[in-house]
Amino acid sequence: MPLLTAPIPPAAIPTLARLGCVFLCVLWLLAGTLGHDLWKTDDAVHLNIAYGIAQGDWLVPRLAGESWLGSPPLFHWLAALCGELFNGFLPWHEGARLATVLFGGAFLSVLSIAAHRLSGANSALAAPLLAIGTLGLVAPLHEAQPIAASLAGWSLALLGLTRWRKSPLPSGALFGSGVGIGFLSVGLAGALLPLATGLLLVAHPRWRGRASLLAWSVALIVALSISLPWPWLLNQQAPELFNAWWTSELADQVPIGGFSHDHIELLAWASWPLLPLAVWNLWLDRRRLGHPQILLPLIGSSVALAAFLIGEAKPAALLPALAPLALLAANGAGRMRRGAANAFDWFGMMTFTLLAALIWLGGIAILTGEPQRVAKNFTIPAPDFGAQVSIPHIVIAIAASVGWIAVILRTPRSPWRAAARWSVGLTTVWVLLAALWLPWIDHVKTYRRISSNFHEELEKSSTKANRSANNRRASDCIGREGLGPGHRASLDYFDGIRTVAAPASESCRHLIVQTHPQTEKERSGWQLLLEASRPGDNTERLRLYRRS
Image 1 (cartoon, helix red, strand yellow):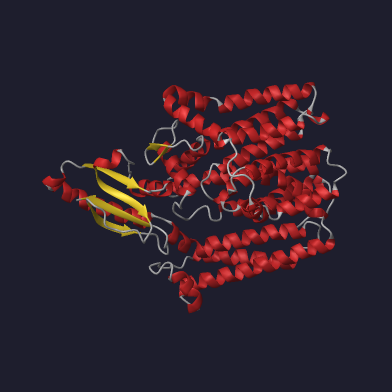
Image 2: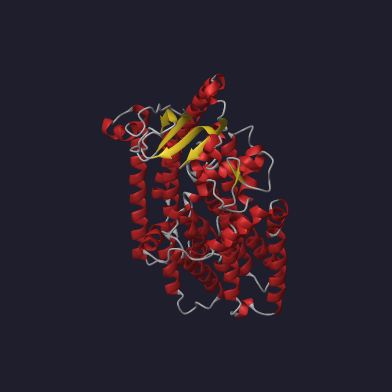
């Protein structure tokens, strides 16, 4: 992909560079999103919720038939719509997962526009490229997770703040839309983050004045218009569910855990390479920190990082900080010293070339069984996996590899070359994983076969029980013990197996238990029908019992 030399005016940016950036982002978003079953835990949970919404209840999210209020349902609404829309072309869960692609595409697009407004045309290409090259964004933007919608809303709020006083009406509408989308995606946390950022910026002259009041008024109206209908309708239809959800939302805003070594470790790898580039840019502009183009992403990233550091060290909690960090890093990527840029470039080329070679070696071993030492690493965890040659996947893998070699050999010198090559390299590795290893990964991560075996055994057991007078008192419900949300979601989606918890399960005829392999199998009053686990999983067992 042709790279830019800095600085050049927007009109001078080659069209091929813009098209190359768009193509790379689309390729990154699609790779690994399609072509696999529901994976535990978040992917299965949110796809099952979306599937339940598609069955008719658009107000109350439900997991395997039971109400689930872990987050508002904006992401699940779009996922349900995508699942129904593409159901004739793709499996339902793959179509629904395209909601992540749409929200991820919106996030990258808005991020590019915001970077253009703050730092110019070069940053408009650098920001989305650095985002897809960020390690912490790879997994969340390829699974069915509401955080993808939250990131889109957060970037929209940042975009609105870029021209707060200059264009108060559209800026207020964009900011309010971002706040509303954030709220309907992940709850109060998605709304409080942009609100805190906007209120802190009020101290700066660029965000004060009569125009600012107009922008805040518009933002408030738009945010309330988007945010209020769902909780209001939920309160009208199911006040007990609304009270439980609101209580949980308020409790989630109380910091839990506090700062620890885990925060530093997670921040170090998940924010690479954004954080060092952002810090470098701040150092270069240390005498201009009050300038709006620096202050806005600095305040946004500071607020998001503060929320992350005082809470639990979870990847999802760090993700909001990556959007404003990308705005800061986009400008710093083209201002690295020659030695640092060459070192970064060399490290990226060597790392991703080695990883690409290892992925090819593993892919060949999966398909052919040779070399045997490498193949053992795949056959031991999944001895029953039968690899099949897929010509389209091999063609994609070859094309990605040739493209990476071309980028290494043909990319001209430029201040942006190191950052661009890093993003291309990470995308290449991700595409190779999706093309060569995805069937094997899917085999060891899905619960489809377990669910099918349980369904078959339940049908046999129910038929026998209905013929026996001794089991007439037991109801046909299925109890559960230790069964996680991902298990429940997968069993329900694949075969309609729904379980109930105690005390409702006390009279059930069957029981599904999730436990450790070392746990005693015998249970008083129960007969073990089936024990199963995912291939290579030595930490859990799913056991199906029938009441004696």
